[in-house]
Length: 130
Image (cartoon, rainbow, N blue to C red; front, side, top):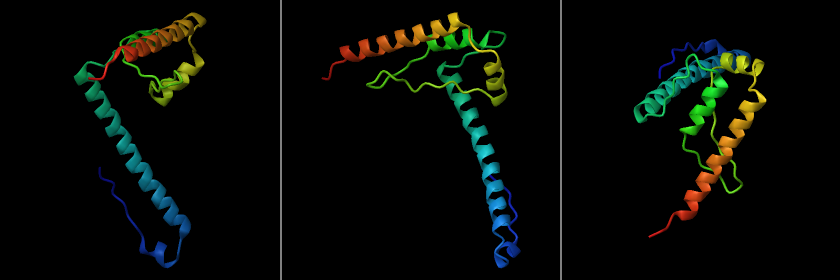
């Protein structure tokens, strides 16, 4: 990544803490923005390459999320918790908050998670060490 910056020597000479703080924050914002873009591009290319991408265009998000879950490998900790996350753009997140899943969609989601958990533990119990 590359971030072009201009550092004023007067900030040091005058010990301008506010200017230095602003400068560092702006550098971090630029770099962070580039890193996030690269991260999501890499994830997108990788998931497509291994066949884990899913096109939900034109579908109800909550129904599409359930369909994605069914094709996803999940693991669970000793307490039955998973760490699977769905990442969406902030604008999409706001729209989803305004249009939450129906009770039926939420139940289907919970049932699917339960089935994934049971499947995970069933496979884990049958593994043998050689």
